[in-house]
Amino acid sequence: AESRDLPAKKPTALTYYAQGVGTLFARTDWTKSALWLAFVAGKYTESHAHQEQGGFTLFEKDWLAVTENIWTRSGIEQGTETNNVVRFSRNGKVIRQHTDAAAKLDITRNDPAKGTVAVSADLTPLYARGEGVQAWKRTIDFANHRLLVHDEFSVADGVAAVFQVNVPQKPVVEGSTVRAGRLIVHVASPANATIRVLDWTTLDKDEFRGGWRIDIEHPP
Image (tube, rainbow, N blue to C red; front, side):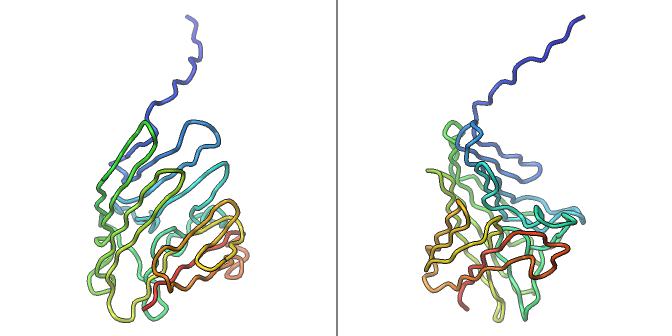
């Protein structure tokens, strides 16, 4: 008997929703230079899983936006602080996402042939009642070589909300626009958002060996 490796067949679809694990994938094409997206909104049931529900990853020849765990020594930083989500906190303490909960994801537009997709995710169930996060809904739209992210949330008095993006290169803030290497983040709303940059290595050089985080804080 003779066996031969058969050439890989290129998929026709540029989007894929892995419903069982709650992860959506999309890419602009099948070349090595494609813009690639992953979005997480599903079940959070494992104690060792990360608090990344509602988080996104962007890649184009290299990481554009990705979890800070990429640059950690351990790779097991589980908190929302290291993921591309909205970080909620009260009195300086981050409000965590809770296990045994699940986000609800609805695909509102999907064109697998073009790699364009839009979804709406309700992340409210990830937060325990009484902790301050009353509602959080995130919509994303991946088309025309860009990702549009829109968040709607309701929080109790004293709860801060920060939209965060972890990036590999040092961000430069120019008004409502932030540039981090080849990634350009434009803050469309709110107009009076406060933008800050965190150098992760200033927290713990042994654990955090690189990476920056862009913090876009919604005014109270």
